[in-house]
Image 1 (tube, one colour):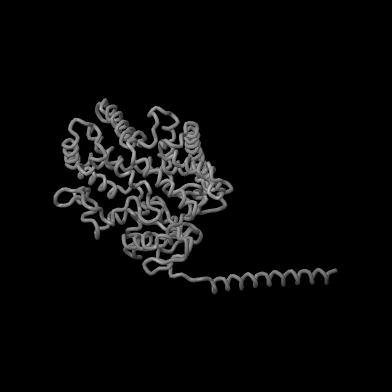
Image 2: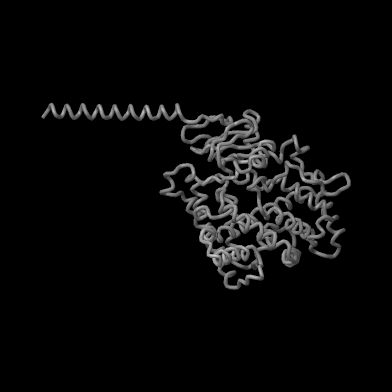
Length: 462
């Protein structure tokens, strides 16, 4: 019996040694044969954590400007196990997002992103592919249709006249943010007393203010089994916002008339009904009710958040620079006279107002790193190799404050967007608050005239 036990023990030992050798050889072969990339440089991080501790409680977009002095315009940081590349000047962003637009058109499929978008069924965070292309095409078509009609102008005029009258009743100091928060967004008409709508606006505020550092669940997979309190809170807020969207879509269905497209939601319903009539099963799988809800939510949420943040920054700059405020006021008074709200066709008559908006979007840069991209294949930028599936950010803030392209970039100076005769000059390539390339904000054509009319209308209360 003793001999048998010794033999079993020896055999077990040999088995363990053999297994360890096999594992060691496997690891060695993997590291010897795996493809090696000439990655962009960056600071070394800690094991498992990467550079996360170094960027905690810091403005990453400002930190990257300092890192560029040592590592150059393309920098690698490891956010836990996630390798991330940052593009920090105009030239490398143009090379990647424009010159190699498809290579950099993907979206990283994070745990939180997939959770918030019900499995990646929206536009903003869906990965590059046929479904995303279809929804972006439908969305662009809907927005163009809406802007061509009189409804766009009529709604802005109606809303802004009501808002400026109400603001005019204020005495003393007041917070303008409560007025420019939801009410100016003409493509979603809701009463300012609508409790549910205002709750959605508050939820969007929280998303905007508290998601900057991301979610630990994206970096440490075990947490996905037991999500943090922060993640659970945001899932609850997300569910409330989506519930609001689905209610609006169902209300549209009940009053839908095929020949009378009212807005973006109707355009999506038309596309769905056309697919149903043609019995196009493949298309229907890309335009489910979930896809509709997520796409409408994207257009609503993105437009609401960025527009109000831009207006809020602009009003603060006007308060800080009274000489700019005086020039804007004089221009609007000269063009409008006794009217409260300008016509869209008068935009060219208000070049200084336009320049104030452009300078606010440059200096304020409400989305300093924009949304993350992901490489769809092995590619290169600035001579460095970027593996497929790498997360990539463009540092829009750095581009907007690059002294090579902007004279005295820290100074708020709307005149930089005007020519010698005071007319609005063609925008610089280094002005990109809506990003560039295939994933550029599709609502740029809508947002700029809308913001212009709203800002000019606010002159009544300056």
